Image 1 (cartoon, rainbow, N blue to C red):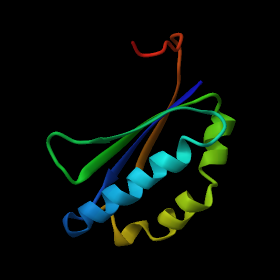
Image 2: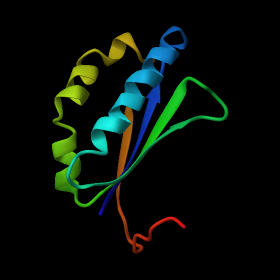
Image 3: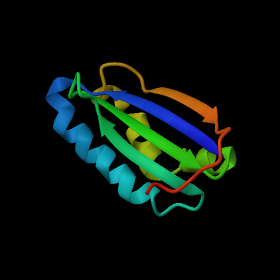
Length: 101
């Protein structure tokens, strides 16, 4: 499995719009093959910081996800919405994945 953590730093005046766009990513991504978990979070310390926590069946599934038109469209204009570029970290899951209880 592939785990991804991505940080988005919204411009304060664009915060609401960024949240709506990212919420839209959740709906669309959860329809993709290979998606296991895709969760959007807001920082407790800074409401302009959003984080995605993602689990994918494989790195290939995540790479296909990154080519989706709705993501590419946002990435092309991300500087209009964000104070700095998106920070993305990927990991290989070592422990077995268990469903939440």
